[in-house]
Image (cartoon, rainbow, N blue to C red; front, top):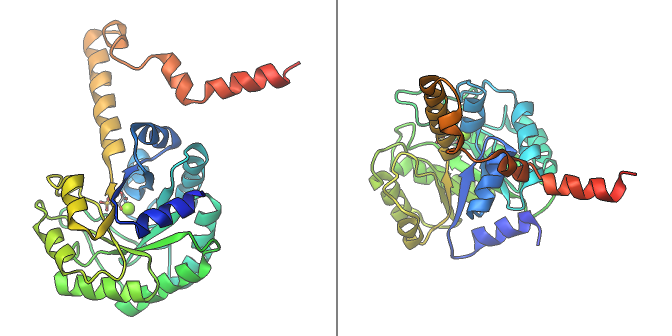
Length: 290
Ligand code: SPV
Ligand code: MG
């Protein structure tokens, strides 16, 4: 079964799958090895890995090529975060086939205006495009896909923008009507109340996707019990893990004046080589090098 088909089946099933953010293929492979069902091609993580804000600063090509590199190195589906679609509905028509050709199994496109500001930033600039304009973008994305199993997920930012539940529901329904295969509903409230109220009110023409970064109390069991959510995305835990680990190790080496103490604490070089696919290279060497 293709990755696209697997993701489509998961969205159409009654179970919850978990996607872990990745900003490079190594992180994606670690996520797959840990048992995640899918990879989230996070714009936030990739921007952060370039030490840049997640505010439409990175060029599309940088994100697209990272998605291609990730998809080539994992066997689970990749859900690509294409922000606002890098322009208007016409741009979306050109963007979506490129992400599909790069190996993504889905795109998530959000209803903010371009250039976007990152959703979880306190006091961020959260301007939304009109419902009509965004429906045009969703329709363009759906019309542009080549494989019918490729998923188009519309992301509602009405709660992030402080517009309230009624508008969030109105937007979600309009986007589902425009052909979105699922609705990602995002919230930055520190408790799950806002999201729980949205999920309870959601009439359910298509399934939901949650990103519980701001309300980590909500477990997968809690989300599965809601019945309407099919994907939980862990939006930035790879980059946060990397930052924490690097910062600690770098500080320790400065403190210790060398690497002797830290060496035993780190994954050994052989393990990194295994993650690089060294076994495959050796096999090729023994078969083909004369
Ligand atoms: C991302 O990971 O890039 C996201 C999720 O879009 S968030 O950063 O929470 O907006
Ligand atoms: Mg993003």
